[in-house]
Amino acid sequence: MSSIIQDAQRIVRDSIDAVLPDAAVRRALAGQQFAKPVKLIAIGKAAWRMAYAACTTLGDQVDCGVIITKYNHSEGEIPRMEIFEAGHPVPDENGVRGTKRALELVHGLTPEDTVLLLVSGGGSALFELPLEGATLDDIAFLTHQLLACGADITEINTLRKHLSAVKGGRFGAACAPAHVQCIVLSDVLGDSLDTIASGPAVPDQTSREDVQRLIAKYSLTVPEHLYPLLNLETPKQLSHITTHITGNVTALCQAAADSAQALGYHPLLVTTTLNCEAREAGAMLASIAREIRRSGQPVQPPCAVILGGETVVHLHGNGKGGRNQELALASAVGIDGLPDTCIFSVGSDGTDGPTDAAGGIVTGEFARKAKERGLSIEAALADNDSYAILRDMDAHLMTGPTGTNVNDVCMLLCR
Image (cartoon, rainbow, N blue to C red; front, side, top):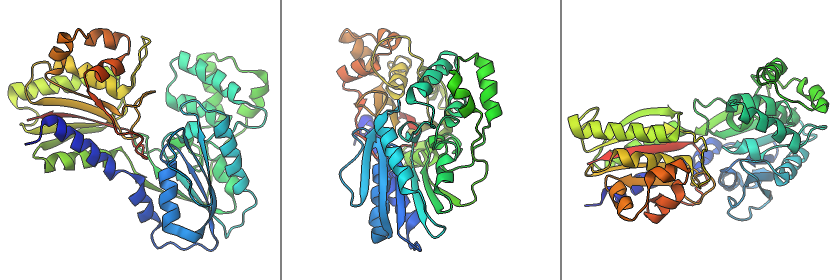
């Protein structure tokens, strides 16, 4: 019989395999014929895999294209494709160069032309060109102010859209009058199209009035030369665009549930919209584990309790880690001593924070064994240093970059 750790590792592999973009892109394009060879633009962490699937499906129907992805996420050359690896989560000049090249490819097209736009998570940082008169430093300056004020990601993107030549529907507008076929791998809870990669080919739901309200709400210091740009409106109608979502966190969680069931666990999918502090989610999963062991509620062992979404970490220390590693580590104290119990959390893109780990995995023996080695869970959490202690305890989930990005899945297994 496999160990509970081996079961967890199998579930991780199965769930990520189910949301790899290759098959989904091929299904979306199967049997399609275009009047003229298409221009292909792929952006995001999964851009290379999505582009590869599209090129192998369409063959000579692809004229040329640009791929913009995160550093170390390209898997080699693709015929007729120009590949740019760029900064994430902070935009850099490589991303700007790739974005400029993409705009050059879609300039001057006709209604008979098609732009195939492949979008995945991370596109917001990777696909960026400031409006003429603005710079990356300008955008960073305002973004840092918003972060310091506690603004949420929707508010931050509202402002960034209005300083970008490609966000908020502006890339879609630049492709007109060509038809844009957009295939999306969603990393946004609720699959809001104008939020995924900041909606480069979607009518924008934010307005210049929203920007002015943000400036007033947070008393932002705005350089004088940016005010005319912030008063420009983003596109509100884009009739030449069709969009198809190929994968999301719901599919990730359902695949995890199916895999767990195949291994003999009774799955309980609690939510696909997890959105809280990572250590709070870890503590909650641990409390569910204790309740299962005490009363058999809310589901009898052997069971798998599944949560999908994306937690956050507020940094108070100087350590190294990521939200999935911190969630797993935070749960370890709560399940201390529980037999046949395991909690893991993993990012579908294979990279958790600025580390090479995809996530972390702990059992009811983790806390005791860490203490025996002189390792302090509490100190690691206080310093946001989950990576080091999980490494020392051989408790990392390592997948390498997966080529997909549809949020995270965390799971409690009880046998």
